[in-house]
Image (cartoon, rainbow, N blue to C red; front, side):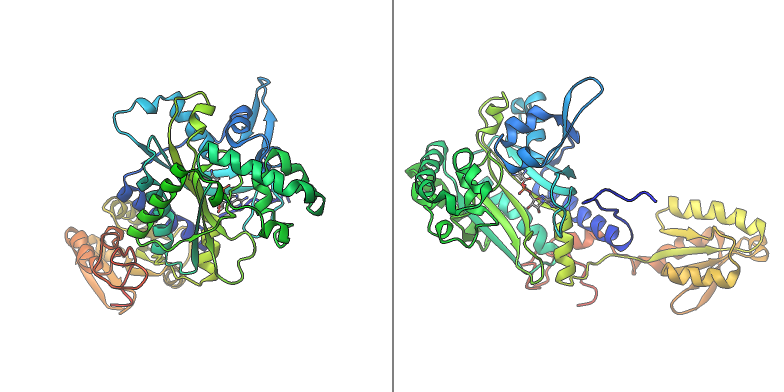
Amino acid sequence: MISKQKGCLDLYGSTAKKWQYVNKIIDNLMEKYNYNYIRTPIFESSELFHRGIGESTDVVTKETYDFVDRGERKITLRPEGTAGIVRSYIENKMYGDANQPVKLFYNGTMYRYERPQSGRDREFTQFGVEVLGSDDPLIDAEVISIPVMLLQILGLKGVKVKINSLGDKESRDNYRKALIEYFKPHIKELCEDCNERLLKNPLRILDCKVDKDNDLLKNAPKTIDYLNEESKKRFESVKEYLNELEIDYEVDTKLVRGLDYYNHTVFEIEASVEGFGSNNVLAGGGRYNGLVDTLDGPETACIGFACGIGRIIQALDLEEVKLPIDESLEIFVMYVSDTEKKYAASLVNYLRANGFKTDTEYTGRGLKAQFKQADRLNAKYLILLNDEDLKNDEIKIKNNKTKEEELVSVDYLLYYLDEHLSDEDIDFEEYSDDCECDCENHKGHCHCHHEEEE
Ligand code: HAM
């Protein structure tokens, strides 16, 4: 037997249903926020990630999937979405679009050669957004509000928003120098990786997993103290907008993020639910005002974030959130004879074309076993085809809950099913509009199915 590769996932069954549900919520949310979908290639030239993410980052030095293709090109499977989107923004000259800023969202697989563990895979899926062409602190707050609202809609309670500012280039450079000066005399007390980070990327020492309890890290200089006046003012403004949006956050002066392109606002959303383990960051992002010009585009102010869908599902499972996933079937069509089967084939097709979730029998089961199959599929209505009824242009329909049966004229069938199924229908759109519920989680923007509570 050939097994799947380490750190990869076969998505199927009930987990796949949850995943599809989360994706639907994301699409719906992005429509409300007026962000446009973008899909970029899964592989790009290796140079894009080296220049974009940073030569000294863990992602680039240790974690990329690199290969040389048959045309001798150096290729890398994308470890994240931002660099590819910035490449596309430049290549497609989106900076020239009339609609500015360019607000994009993506949802796709990323690849990092990591040590697989809970919440850390080699192939994983990120939903993320990138806003290119605005330096307004309001956009920073809006971008942070997206994963906050997503997690709220999904019903997750134990989440913590952490924010920080790295300031502009001048502030960041000053901070970098201060860190090197501070750590240099004691660097031997820290792990091997931190020794390497000292000159290449001293900010990364601050979120080292190995040395995280070392007092040296705890007492290190704080980003906030190295922000110049303009960067300070900007950070204050972002916080004010977050207050306006009623987003609870805490300022974490140690938050620096693992990719090199950040400046000004950085943020992470953690799952604080017990049992999650150390890979508990559900979403992370920040501003990257210098990346577009690093990749040969015009100077452009940008901000974005990405979240791991797998980690969100894990958090939902740990909090035992029951998602309103409709696992029922509307109609199961049953038959015995060959002529009934032929009729079933066209009837199922007709019902599906008219919008009914319909299924039938495919494995030669007898009638009794078909009833069982209909129950397994949670069928609401059964259509029991019978040659005698069909001769009279009639069809027997059984309510699978009340067990009531009715003989319905073929001409009247659609009308009958519409009538009987409509009040049981879960209409996603209906629940996605602002609802009047004062359910504590949703603050009047409830996207949930409230049937049970009502
Ligand atoms: P990141 O922090 O590397 O940022 O990843 C964002 C999120 O992706 C993480 O918070 C986590 O939920 C998920 N994630 C990352 N690595 C893995 C993994 N190995 N297994 C499972 N989930 C993972 C970025 O990727 C930036 N591009 C975000 C961004 C967008 N910044 C600005 N724009």
